[in-house]
Length: 249
Image (tube, rainbow, N blue to C red):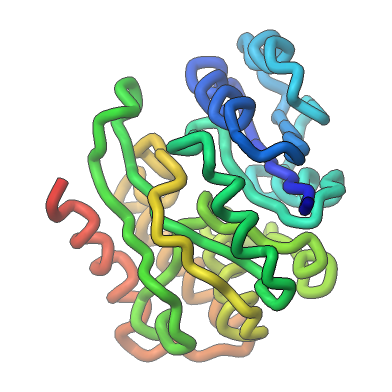
């Protein structure tokens, strides 16, 4: 049985991290290492984490941002496969890891991604947007496509061989990582057609028009960092593609 390492990054997340922890504790899969990387929270985060004995590692100290914290978690991970589920998010059902693991039984598969729902901050049963990924084709990134990062599971060996998150980027390091792995290095990827993550609406990159502009600039940097050249319309299409997430809610 493959071992999964799930990394949760948190900072003053006492109002939401309990949902995250419970969704992992309730998983039907037997071999999960849950690692919490906390940025020295001053609220009750640590007390809530202490109520969940399944947590394998809890580190609470100042860090240099969310992607630096994710890298710290990857460095601590001992699992065969790594997933990242942050403290605002939760798995949508108890068989998420079991379903993802079935794809990794094929030893040629390097990464698996799935679908995601954006949900109300308070009532997580209330869906606000639906992110349906679809099967990946090699040119999809040129057409503004990307998979939802909270659904993205990667073999630890891929991180070791091809690198972790680039902390030069403040809001687009997840995009850069997936661009690098899927387009530049063409790792073999599988699509699980299932909503596996409920993500509370209100991400950093979309919190304001200013943040969206900064994210767009960082997206452009992500291509340049990898020696890739997007089409003139690629980074325009990326936010436009989100419009269909609001359809059929």
